[in-house]
Image (tube, rainbow, N blue to C red; front, side):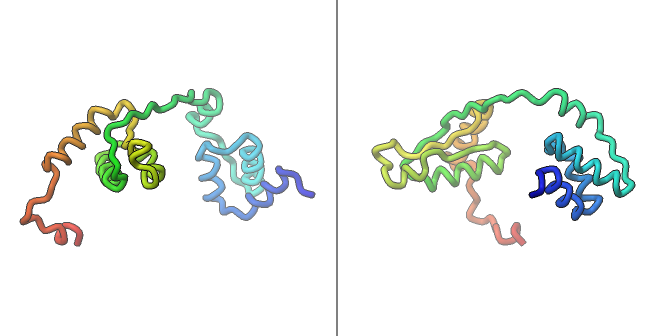
Amino acid sequence: MATFQEALAEIYRNFSDEHLLEKLRSGTMIELAVKVAEDELESRGISYRPMPQQEEAYAAPIPYQALQFVTVASSLNSIALHILRARLEAEGIPAIVADANMAQSYSVAVGGARLQVPSEFYDAARQIIADVNSGALALNDDDDVRSQLA
């Protein structure tokens, strides 16, 4: 039975030089995988030195910071919230629709679905939702969307 290290070595033997270097540069490999990949490159006559920022990444991992999501809209109609979510994401604001599946079955009991964004995007999201609701972002009757899509 092959060890994990031997199995990795076999996998890396089948990688192209470029793909193996790309994997190493990604900074996502565990220490054992990095060692096996470096050994494989060395056997091919390729020397690999990690870039300085990669060495720093191994030395000091980025501290975990939880996102705080806040509700910017709620509705019994989860489809409407998904449309708003898509608009927010088009504006660069990450968003999720929470409880959408639950709201489909028990919409009144659970209070509907909720559109949520990270707290730092709350004000911008509320402004975009207000613009959508006021019609400020609506197409004019004479706008030809088909010409823009072509």
